[in-house]
Length: 307
Length: 307
Image (cartoon, rainbow over all chains, first blue to last red; front, side, top):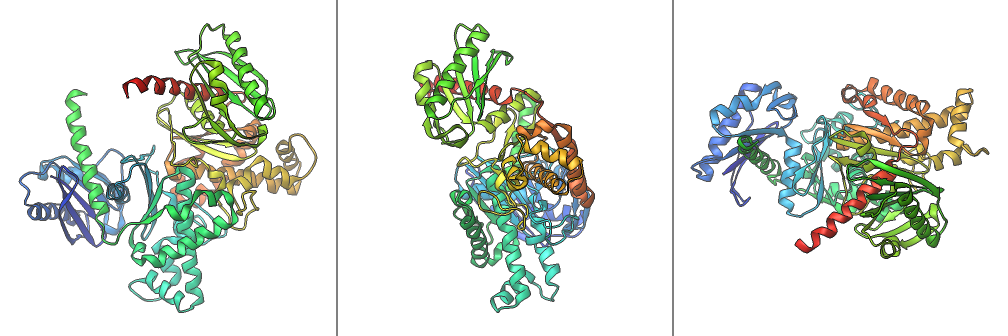
């Protein structure tokens, strides 16, 4: 049994995956705040999902976490939504769990899991639309891993030198247009679900909301174009909090893609709107992907004696 | 002996590559115009480079050509600079040459050859700065091949919705900023080498030339950022006609990259300017890469009886 955990800012999603690839158990629990509480959350989630799966032994644990992971290490940095500045998560939990543990960025885990859920061969771009914007590319079931950990950081590509200022310092980044955090701060009205409020207000004719909604779609469409024109992925799967808007988001994004296809025969030939898919609400992509990443750690450990 | 041909708009570059990977012979000849003349150019180039290499037998021929290649076929489409609308080049030359022949887009061939010339492991983006702008990604010696042939078409990513109109129909494409054809048409003054004229005039203080030079650098810098933030390539190698400007181009591009690094700590952390390399003038990257692609055709033919 391979376990996979997706540690989110508020909730942790844990799955147990059988050798066949089937998810046999799933639990969700609240995520603790700060390094010690995050470690405890991992241990609690493992205990809970093992009980749920009624599993005797587990082979590996994979963990997806919203932070920077030093390539090839188990060290998490700048997981600001979890109150973690720096934490060697593998060193903290592996001795207690007694199995190989792998930690990776949650967007990379979600991309791998989304590819497994799609069950299509070929390549896929995953575009995560959350507080920030990031992407990952999966080809034939394997993540594209870049040189220094910046693969998929397309949120900080500027697509308009006169666009809104991004928290990174540039103007017109994809994230400045479409990142939930950036958009909410421009909206600056009270409400627990600012992006939904913007879409509702835009539907009601609020001019400021119409602009923000169009900016969101512009940024998402730009991200889709970057993934297809750079890596020519078969499909771009949208995931992350903003996809809770479902068809309302999809319609706006398709309108942006169609507008550029009307301008450009080249873009038209790429059939961008047809390549866009949306991760179903509540799909355990990140936890499943984390389980797959954890399983890689088993293979690598077994490879050592022969190496 | 594996032969590689780079069919350019005016000249064809042909190399013979030994089993060791060393280039043992190189010839250049004028490229013919139109399908029949292009076929004859291939046959002439093969004869000439075989004679130069004093080679008894050849194992394969690879051909890089500036046009769209239907994936997995030997069919060339829209090679407008060669007067070729549609040509099954493999069908036309393979029976006469009697060896496996592979045809691919010249930018993909150049990328593969540039990676071989670098002789570094890891990943590399190749950004071709010619009449148009296109890129390709090589990882551990293999080309990233996308789903439908649009991998590397980053020239048609818009990086400014208010930017110059691109021949593709969009505004602010990277190619509209930095493509030699687009820039020359905005310059609109007589001269055989418009890009060099623009740089000379900019040095002399011509205001229109300063704007165009800055736009070229803006487009090239955007292309570099797209390759690193999407695929996190170790290095971006610049090739194509514009690199004839050498250090003058490099300085302008570095200034653009440095400006965005000053704005953004994230971009600063990527050390973009340090990752940029330039293909040496006259380097036989595309012909070498074509030879490597041709050699893949041998492997595939040999694989069939066992398949």
